[in-house]
Image 1 (tube, helix red, strand yellow):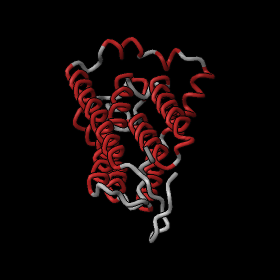
Image 2 (spheres, one colour):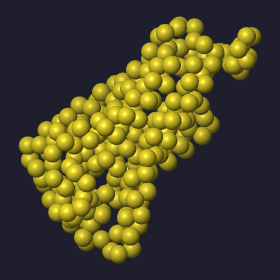
Image 3 (cartoon, one colour):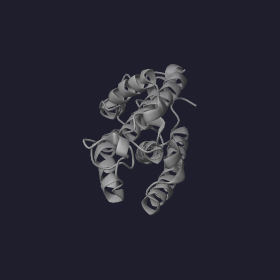
Length: 235
C-alpha cells in the first residue's frame, strides 16, 4: 500500500524499474509498427492498388442501406478530434504527477497525429478510391480517421494504465475496438482503400508508442528514486 510522502502529500512506493520496462516495451512495439508502416507505404507506393484493395473495393457500394448508414455515422464520429482530448487528458495527468517528459511527449503526439499524418499522405500522394467522390479530402494513405482514432486509443490506454488501473483492461479493449470499427467504416463508405486503413492503424499506434515510450523511460531514468507523485503503478 503506497504511503503519503511527508512533504508533498502524494503517494510513495512506486517502481522506476517497472516504468523503464514499460517504456522499453512501448519503444519496441512502436518501432515494430513503424517498420511495418514503412513496408506497407513502399508497397502502396510501388503498386498503387494492391490486390487486397481491388478485392475489397466494392465493399461500400455492395453494402446494404442500413450498414452504409451506420458506417457513415461511425465514420463521422471518428472524424472528431478524439486524439486531442486523449492527449490533453494524459498531458494534464502527467503534469500533475510531475512527469515532465511524459507530458511533453503527450503534447508532441497531439501534433504528430495531425500534421505528421498529413505530411506522410502528401509524400505518398495516393489518390482516393473513385467511390470517395470529387470532394474527398486530399490524399488517401494513411487514413486520417484510422490514424487519429488509433492514436487516441493508445494515449487513453497509457493514461488508464497509470492513472486508472482498475478500469484499464476495459478501456484498452474498448479503445481498440473503437479504432477498428472506425477504420472498417472508412472502407465500407468507400472513402479509403483497405491498405489506407491498415496504414492509419499502424501510424496511429507506432507514433504515440515511440514518443510516449521515450517519455516514460526518460522520466524513470531522470531519477532512480522517482518522485512519489509519479504516474507509474506499484509493482
